[in-house]
Length: 200
Image (tube, rainbow, N blue to C red):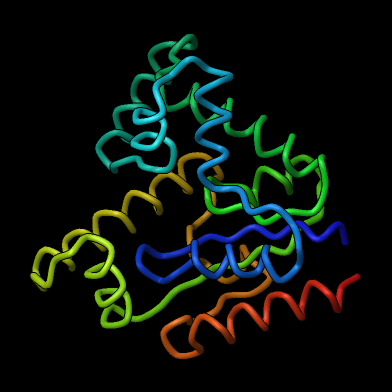
């Protein structure tokens, strides 16, 4: 295996931190914000727009896109354009060598391109995630935290489904799913790195 790891994750489950540490342990690049920067360069879209649209899609947006797609063969909105550019960037990063890629349907993008990768999904219970999100946004409001987690997860689910035709977080779409709340970040990192090394 070429040591390419993709990481899907629930909001607040620590996927970014775990992916970063895995890349550091293996001595390979970690791609998250780099995808945004490269997409901005290649597309001309503002970075803020890409960050907002790059992995976020509401259920209403998805329905509207389906209706528009049926009514016009030429329908191609901003998010579709951003996804197409991100697709090309992800393939370029993967073809350049071993790396860890966070989110953005990277697992399915690489699968369709015939590029081998170890696909991981990180999840955790609401309590563990709420603690993490609370630290991220600086709020202890339980209602606010729950709403934000639900919103982010629903958007990622709809985005993944829209662009892959598969169910986000379904264990059958990944080689391993890890509960970071139970296992802890360090053990998740250890499991992933050891799995990659064992597959060489």
